[in-house]
Length: 93
Image (cartoon, rainbow, N blue to C red):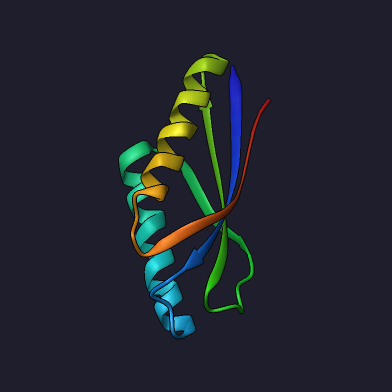
């Protein structure tokens, strides 16, 4: 069994208030959960209205499947026009 952890720091282009940020982040978290069955949480920068950091985790039978799933998650986030990825870290245990 392998556990994958991913931290994605994002810059939200459409955000002009904390309310806008919350709308974008909650929408992204929900879509990631529904599409990829991963755990997602906002882990820092809660008071900054244009930046956020998401923690994403998953469990799989082997390292290859976990790596593939996390790469698909990153590609999905990259495809969201409302934001940009500023930093990315993937670890597999």
